[in-house]
Image (cartoon, rainbow, N blue to C red):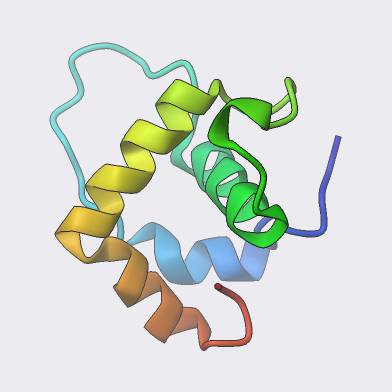
Length: 88
């Protein structure tokens, strides 16, 4: 299912390189794009993290990654790269 908050291909191309890269120990179950779609859904709709739709990654994954990106400044970099029209 798609949501109005999902990243477009063009937006993903812009911010994909801004995300911190980690050593890969095993293949992730969820892509960064899917997790970001969960973050954007929550931020736009203001729902509780555990009320994310079930077709998005689990709220614990989305919330944990949100905290990491927020702490590292990656979310601010994304906002700057996409312009304020897109986030928050």
